[in-house]
Length: 185
Image (cartoon, rainbow, N blue to C red):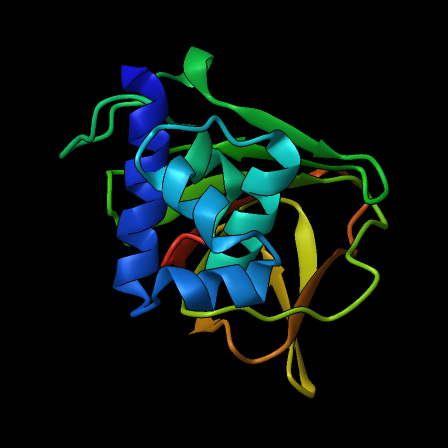
């Protein structure tokens, strides 16, 4: 099946970009070498659970693996076509501003945080991150430091430093988030 092969190609490309052999990906993800090989060659269709395990191991957003379209050199995403993810435990709405360029090194999404909402723990991931506050007031904690940002303010930082975000205002905060490389939400 042609469309399934693109999913496997993306997994293989990401794995190689990280300098991983199938055996290493298998050991980290708990997925057998043979199943990974069959997925990469398009002989098997992975389950959602398997895709999430692979995405977590490769430290990418699972949606990057689900994009089964032909590899592309540009990304045009219409406002009406944006994928939306809702984190029920946080009341955070994520909207994918870009779906990404195949093998791309950039992910852009918007976050909507309800008043008083924030992640319950610090988190970190590979790369760099830039946040642009479109609306509202937020507190960004990066390492031991806290920063208060308002509409129009931005902050960029190494995402390997543990960080967190909270809406400290009384309206929904809207934030543009740019990650490089693309990371799991």
